[in-house]
Amino acid sequence: MPVIDVQKDVEALSLTFVAEFDASVEQVWQVWADPRRLERWWGPPGWPATFEQHEFREGGRCRYHMTGPQGEKAPGWWTITAVDAPHRLEFDDGFADEHGEPDTSLGATHAVVTLEDLGGRTRMTTFSTFESADQLRTMLEMGMEEGMRQAMGQIDDVLAGSVPAGG
Image (cartoon, rainbow, N blue to C red; front, side, top):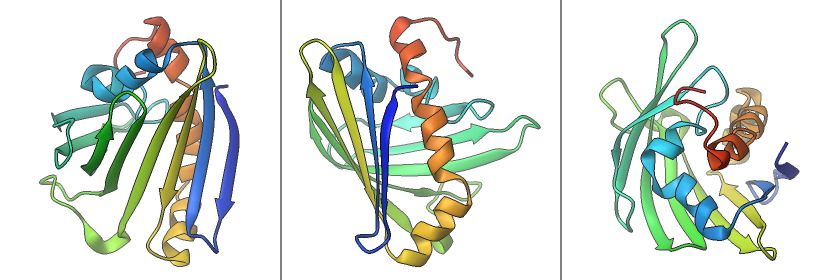
């Protein structure tokens, strides 16, 4: 499992995942930059993602949905706030309605992804901040921690080119 550490800090309204991969920073960057690669890991196993829109630039919008085992859809959105290829990506993230528009009922999070070269390996740190302690607790109760662990656990196979779309 590539996730080596998870830190929850309710006081700082943050959740941090640290993962390491046997791949270069540039290769790991592509699992974010290439929507077809992103689709192969963004949802946990059994909930593959489909990105209908992926404007990978500052100010760009991303629209996607994850499809569950019974065909149910869980739509989401990103607004990319900063891109410093291939080392840093920042985006606002949230749930969407059936039309792909932001659903504000659960609020939004802000994610900062950094990629660090470890001499041919890469450490990926994903730091998410929340609007309130209640929002963070709700997301944790919905399974965000385990879902992200499982989703990031698929990245090795994406990097190796051995997992088909849809998990």
